[in-house]
Length: 265
Image (cartoon, rainbow, N blue to C red; front, side):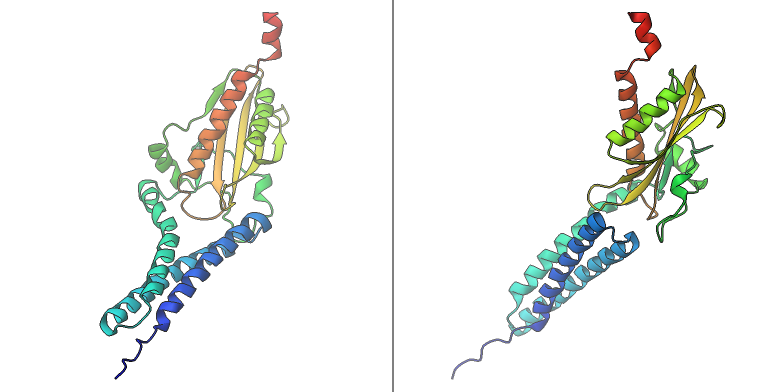
Protein backbone atom coordinates (compact mmCIF):
# COMPACT_ATOMS: atom_id res chain seq x y z
CA UNK A 1 0.00 0.00 0.00
CA UNK A 2 1.39 3.39 -1.02
CA UNK A 3 1.93 6.00 1.66
CA UNK A 4 0.23 9.34 1.14
CA UNK A 5 2.51 12.34 0.61
CA UNK A 6 2.79 14.59 3.69
CA UNK A 7 0.53 17.64 3.58
CA UNK A 8 2.03 21.05 2.86
CA UNK A 9 1.49 23.71 5.48
CA UNK A 10 -0.13 26.88 4.18
CA UNK A 11 0.91 28.72 7.33
CA UNK A 12 4.60 28.42 6.46
CA UNK A 13 3.95 29.75 2.95
CA UNK A 14 2.06 32.71 4.42
CA UNK A 15 4.91 33.38 6.83
CA UNK A 16 7.29 33.78 3.89
CA UNK A 17 4.83 36.03 2.08
CA UNK A 18 4.36 38.25 5.13
CA UNK A 19 8.12 38.54 5.67
CA UNK A 20 8.65 39.46 2.00
CA UNK A 21 5.86 42.05 2.16
CA UNK A 22 7.51 43.58 5.24
CA UNK A 23 10.81 43.94 3.38
CA UNK A 24 9.07 45.58 0.43
CA UNK A 25 7.14 47.88 2.74
CA UNK A 26 10.27 49.07 4.55
CA UNK A 27 12.21 49.68 1.34
CA UNK A 28 9.27 51.48 -0.27
CA UNK A 29 8.70 53.65 2.80
CA UNK A 30 12.36 54.66 2.99
CA UNK A 31 12.56 55.47 -0.72
CA UNK A 32 9.32 57.46 -0.76
CA UNK A 33 10.34 59.38 2.35
CA UNK A 34 13.89 60.07 1.17
CA UNK A 35 13.16 60.89 -2.47
CA UNK A 36 9.52 61.98 -2.65
CA UNK A 37 8.86 63.56 0.77
CA UNK A 38 6.41 60.99 2.08
CA UNK A 39 5.10 62.49 5.37
CA UNK A 40 7.35 61.38 8.20
CA UNK A 41 4.55 60.16 10.53
CA UNK A 42 3.18 57.97 7.72
CA UNK A 43 6.64 56.58 6.94
CA UNK A 44 7.24 55.79 10.61
CA UNK A 45 3.87 54.06 10.90
CA UNK A 46 4.59 51.94 7.83
CA UNK A 47 7.99 50.94 9.20
CA UNK A 48 6.44 50.10 12.58
CA UNK A 49 3.83 48.00 10.76
CA UNK A 50 6.65 46.16 9.01
CA UNK A 51 8.29 45.37 12.34
CA UNK A 52 4.99 44.03 13.67
CA UNK A 53 4.59 41.95 10.52
CA UNK A 54 8.08 40.51 11.01
CA UNK A 55 7.13 39.41 14.52
CA UNK A 56 3.97 37.80 13.14
CA UNK A 57 6.01 35.97 10.47
CA UNK A 58 8.30 34.52 13.14
CA UNK A 59 5.35 33.37 15.26
CA UNK A 60 3.69 31.71 12.26
CA UNK A 61 6.97 30.05 11.32
CA UNK A 62 7.46 28.66 14.81
CA UNK A 63 3.93 27.28 14.72
CA UNK A 64 4.66 25.71 11.32
CA UNK A 65 7.84 24.09 12.60
CA UNK A 66 5.91 22.68 15.54
CA UNK A 67 3.35 21.12 13.18
CA UNK A 68 6.13 19.74 10.99
CA UNK A 69 7.69 18.09 14.03
CA UNK A 70 4.35 16.74 15.32
CA UNK A 71 2.69 15.66 12.07
CA UNK A 72 5.51 15.39 9.56
CA UNK A 73 4.04 18.04 7.27
CA UNK A 74 6.04 19.76 4.52
CA UNK A 75 6.90 23.42 5.08
CA UNK A 76 10.01 23.50 7.26
CA UNK A 77 12.01 25.18 4.49
CA UNK A 78 9.52 28.02 4.08
CA UNK A 79 9.35 28.48 7.83
CA UNK A 80 13.12 28.76 8.15
CA UNK A 81 13.30 31.22 5.26
CA UNK A 82 10.60 33.36 6.87
CA UNK A 83 12.44 33.33 10.21
CA UNK A 84 15.66 34.40 8.49
CA UNK A 85 14.00 37.29 6.64
CA UNK A 86 11.99 38.47 9.64
CA UNK A 87 15.02 38.25 11.94
CA UNK A 88 17.03 40.40 9.53
CA UNK A 89 14.23 43.01 9.61
CA UNK A 90 14.12 43.04 13.40
CA UNK A 91 17.89 43.44 13.68
CA UNK A 92 17.40 47.13 12.85
CA UNK A 93 15.26 48.10 15.88
CA UNK A 94 17.06 45.62 18.13
CA UNK A 95 20.42 47.20 17.27
CA UNK A 96 19.11 50.52 18.62
CA UNK A 97 18.22 49.16 22.06
CA UNK A 98 21.70 49.72 23.62
CA UNK A 99 21.67 53.36 22.48
CA UNK A 100 18.12 53.86 23.75
CA UNK A 101 19.06 52.42 27.14
CA UNK A 102 22.34 54.34 27.39
CA UNK A 103 21.19 57.81 26.32
CA UNK A 104 18.33 59.87 27.79
CA UNK A 105 15.01 60.39 26.06
CA UNK A 106 15.57 63.90 24.73
CA UNK A 107 15.23 65.32 21.22
CA UNK A 108 16.59 68.87 21.58
CA UNK A 109 20.22 69.71 22.40
CA UNK A 110 21.93 73.09 22.71
CA UNK A 111 25.17 74.64 23.90
CA UNK A 112 23.22 77.14 26.01
CA UNK A 113 20.61 75.40 28.14
CA UNK A 114 19.81 78.58 30.10
CA UNK A 115 18.97 80.74 27.09
CA UNK A 116 18.89 78.43 24.06
CA UNK A 117 18.90 79.93 20.56
CA UNK A 118 15.34 80.26 19.29
CA UNK A 119 13.97 79.14 15.95
CA UNK A 120 12.17 81.83 13.96
CA UNK A 121 12.02 80.92 10.29
CA UNK A 122 11.75 77.21 11.05
CA UNK A 123 8.95 77.80 13.54
CA UNK A 124 6.64 78.77 10.68
CA UNK A 125 4.76 76.28 8.50
CA UNK A 126 5.71 73.19 10.48
CA UNK A 127 4.99 69.88 8.72
CA UNK A 128 1.96 67.91 9.98
CA UNK A 129 2.72 66.08 13.21
CA UNK A 130 6.00 67.88 13.87
CA UNK A 131 6.76 68.95 17.43
CA UNK A 132 6.86 72.64 18.21
CA UNK A 133 10.40 74.07 18.34
CA UNK A 134 10.06 75.34 21.92
CA UNK A 135 12.91 74.18 24.18
CA UNK A 136 11.86 71.90 27.03
CA UNK A 137 13.54 73.22 30.21
CA UNK A 138 13.48 69.70 31.66
CA UNK A 139 16.17 68.78 29.13
CA UNK A 140 18.64 71.27 30.61
CA UNK A 141 19.83 69.29 33.63
CA UNK A 142 19.72 66.00 31.71
CA UNK A 143 21.84 67.38 28.90
CA UNK A 144 24.43 68.94 31.19
CA UNK A 145 24.92 65.56 32.83
CA UNK A 146 25.11 63.51 29.63
CA UNK A 147 26.76 66.02 27.26
CA UNK A 148 28.97 68.24 29.47
CA UNK A 149 31.29 68.98 26.53
CA UNK A 150 28.64 70.98 24.65
CA UNK A 151 29.26 74.58 25.69
CA UNK A 152 29.23 78.08 24.27
CA UNK A 153 32.13 78.78 21.92
CA UNK A 154 34.03 82.01 22.56
CA UNK A 155 35.76 83.46 19.49
CA UNK A 156 38.17 86.39 19.24
CA UNK A 157 36.78 87.52 15.91
CA UNK A 158 34.28 89.99 14.52
CA UNK A 159 30.76 88.68 15.14
CA UNK A 160 29.51 89.42 11.61
CA UNK A 161 32.47 87.55 10.16
CA UNK A 162 31.88 84.61 12.48
CA UNK A 163 28.23 84.41 11.44
CA UNK A 164 29.20 84.37 7.76
CA UNK A 165 31.65 81.55 8.44
CA UNK A 166 28.98 79.71 10.43
CA UNK A 167 26.58 79.88 7.47
CA UNK A 168 29.33 78.63 5.16
CA UNK A 169 30.06 75.80 7.59
CA UNK A 170 26.44 74.64 7.60
CA UNK A 171 26.34 74.68 3.82
CA UNK A 172 29.57 72.69 3.66
CA UNK A 173 27.91 70.14 5.93
CA UNK A 174 25.17 69.93 3.27
CA UNK A 175 22.52 71.65 5.34
CA UNK A 176 19.86 73.85 3.76
CA UNK A 177 20.24 77.38 5.16
CA UNK A 178 16.85 79.11 5.40
CA UNK A 179 17.79 82.20 7.41
CA UNK A 180 20.95 84.26 7.74
CA UNK A 181 20.76 87.48 9.77
CA UNK A 182 24.04 89.19 10.62
CA UNK A 183 24.45 90.81 14.07
CA UNK A 184 23.93 94.56 14.06
CA UNK A 185 22.95 97.38 16.38
CA UNK A 186 19.35 97.05 15.22
CA UNK A 187 19.08 93.45 16.49
CA UNK A 188 21.16 93.93 19.63
CA UNK A 189 24.40 92.63 18.07
CA UNK A 190 22.91 89.12 17.85
CA UNK A 191 22.78 87.25 14.56
CA UNK A 192 21.22 83.93 13.58
CA UNK A 193 21.63 81.21 10.99
CA UNK A 194 18.86 78.62 10.68
CA UNK A 195 19.21 75.47 8.63
CA UNK A 196 17.64 72.08 7.96
CA UNK A 197 19.69 68.90 8.09
CA UNK A 198 18.64 65.47 6.79
CA UNK A 199 19.73 62.11 8.14
CA UNK A 200 21.60 59.95 5.66
CA UNK A 201 19.46 56.82 5.32
CA UNK A 202 15.88 57.66 6.27
CA UNK A 203 16.09 61.35 5.43
CA UNK A 204 14.59 62.74 8.64
CA UNK A 205 14.64 66.54 8.67
CA UNK A 206 16.06 68.13 11.84
CA UNK A 207 16.30 71.83 12.66
CA UNK A 208 19.56 73.64 13.41
CA UNK A 209 20.16 77.20 14.57
CA UNK A 210 23.42 79.04 15.22
CA UNK A 211 23.42 82.22 17.31
CA UNK A 212 26.35 84.64 17.16
CA UNK A 213 26.38 87.44 19.73
CA UNK A 214 28.99 90.18 19.99
CA UNK A 215 30.68 92.98 18.14
CA UNK A 216 34.05 93.62 16.55
CA UNK A 217 35.86 92.74 19.77
CA UNK A 218 34.69 89.14 19.99
CA UNK A 219 31.77 86.78 19.59
CA UNK A 220 29.92 84.07 21.49
CA UNK A 221 28.61 81.19 19.39
CA UNK A 222 25.79 78.91 20.48
CA UNK A 223 24.29 76.07 18.47
CA UNK A 224 21.06 74.14 18.86
CA UNK A 225 19.80 71.03 17.08
CA UNK A 226 16.25 69.72 17.48
CA UNK A 227 14.40 66.73 16.05
CA UNK A 228 11.04 67.34 14.42
CA UNK A 229 9.72 63.86 15.15
CA UNK A 230 10.28 61.27 17.84
CA UNK A 231 10.90 61.54 21.57
CA UNK A 232 14.38 59.98 21.44
CA UNK A 233 17.02 61.33 19.09
CA UNK A 234 19.44 58.42 19.68
CA UNK A 235 22.20 60.94 20.34
CA UNK A 236 22.02 62.37 16.83
CA UNK A 237 21.50 66.00 17.89
CA UNK A 238 24.53 65.99 20.20
CA UNK A 239 26.58 64.41 17.44
CA UNK A 240 25.42 67.08 15.01
CA UNK A 241 26.39 69.88 17.42
CA UNK A 242 29.88 68.42 17.76
CA UNK A 243 30.18 68.20 13.97
CA UNK A 244 29.09 71.83 13.53
CA UNK A 245 31.37 73.17 16.26
CA UNK A 246 34.36 71.15 15.03
CA UNK A 247 33.81 72.25 11.42
CA UNK A 248 33.36 75.89 12.48
CA UNK A 249 36.55 75.86 14.54
CA UNK A 250 38.44 74.40 11.59
CA UNK A 251 36.93 77.07 9.35
CA UNK A 252 37.95 79.82 11.77
CA UNK A 253 41.47 78.48 12.03
CA UNK A 254 41.82 78.28 8.27
CA UNK A 255 40.85 81.92 7.76
CA UNK A 256 42.71 85.02 8.91
CA UNK A 257 40.98 88.35 9.59
CA UNK A 258 41.90 91.13 7.19
CA UNK A 259 43.42 93.29 9.93
CA UNK A 260 45.76 90.47 10.97
CA UNK A 261 46.82 89.97 7.38
CA UNK A 262 47.63 93.67 7.14
CA UNK A 263 49.74 93.49 10.29
CA UNK A 264 51.61 90.46 9.01
CA UNK A 265 52.41 92.00 5.63
